[in-house]
Length: 406
Image (tube, rainbow, N blue to C red; front, side, top):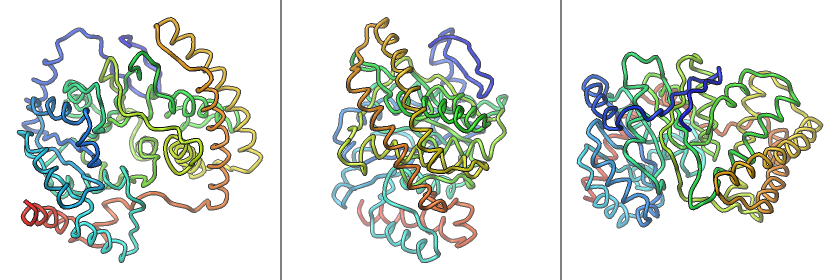
């Protein structure tokens, strides 16, 4: 991946491997004296029992430039929350575990719902949203990064490269998106990006014509990466999707709110692997099948908001165009895998393309049936306007959970 190609849409910061990784970390220690850096870790309790998260913590324990780590804990009871507190206690940095299922946090959600501020279903989006609110309420961070808790190839230098473009005061960036090659265990991974996102963006351009939004998304080498960082200023107005369209949703918000020159993508790893979702062909409410529908809906909604008119005929044409483009791209992926000695199961990948093609129609029909559907959680600016005490009360709720269940 060590090239220096620029696509003209999004600034790409490569890893040319011309300086030792520790050099960036040392610079960040200096930058962090004036620009405090926080990290958000959205976590399921089940991830504490896996192999990835303990290694991630071992790596993070060596990071000296972090001001705070905010862990959002989902699907945990009181005993599991106590266990999580002990589990994360190895971190030397200031850190906090937000127990999203605690009675106090449940009451917080009910309070917001009473104000007409619906937070959507439980999941990564809502977890991240609360962690962002907590970080904003602390009022002491300048840069906030996020990455998943299931990265089996994690290295602390990934975080350094991710936050560097935002912490360096000489850089103009407000958002940095991580990218990397998705390879692991001798296989070419990144199925949803390769087999859905890339071909559907090409197909949309053929079917509806040129759109700046499509060019923007196509400028990202790995638009579905779970690793991104932002400066704090845009965060209060960031609309977080509550469904599985989080990564595309954040990029869409960047396109809507930020100048193109303030967005970059940065190469953070030579190889990346994490927990793989099941395809879930038989159940469209879970797995990659659910993810593909939510991603398509997110793209369709953003294009509609930008003035694109959709119809059943357009979605049928889009499905056919996507299917042909996806198969053509699969030929390229197969050749790429072969020349690099990687495995690619052609039969399984074509079956996945067929599933995604059908899910394009499903997402299109959902959009047509309910075009006003809003899966976004209200922005923290709106929450603060509706109830200025919410953020302070959330800090107190988290602290009281610590005191009661410590």
